[in-house]
Image 1 (cartoon, one colour):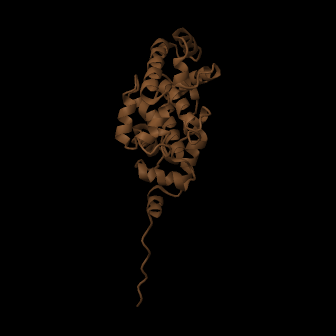
Image 2 (cartoon, rainbow, N blue to C red):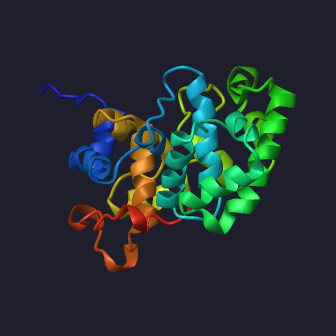
Image 3 (cartoon, rainbow, N blue to C red):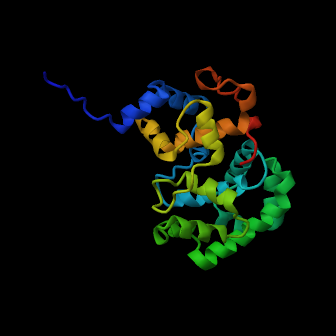
Length: 248
């Protein structure tokens, strides 16, 4: 009697058995409903020219404070309309003007402190990196060294550094921050894998950029009450309101 030997299951098949083929659809729903990368929402294409990194550095500085993501994005747009698109641009403006622009975006609680921080950042970037933070991407390919260098920037703690590097995955060789705990919690809530490698595989199978899925899951955590929701297929992915996006 012949014995039929089944071929070994692929990693993808094993994940589908665990999470169901519907995981791909849930991943797409997260991004379609909540949005993906914050940089793209601001019109910043980090896969484009190096200059886009400078724009994202300014936005990440705003995200780094304990203020809602919605206010941070609105404030960035106010600065952009005024011609302040990078940290170096901010360094060229008088402090009073920066404070006024930050106030206009709703950033009033941190206006004075952030104006001072932007001036300090502009000075350091000029002195250490020739006025272009994007040079770091090619100089430092070790994730720990890169994160250490960024954390030494004035006012750039772990929260700002993670926000900055998350959306530079695949652009800078050293941009490889750990998956945010809140994104992992969201993944478990909607029955997606919380392990980074498995979640990246789901993103690939769903034809999503992993950065968009990670950002979408983070957005879910920022505006959703997990305790009051059954999760999985039953999760309505929040009554999404951008003003509810709490701080990073």
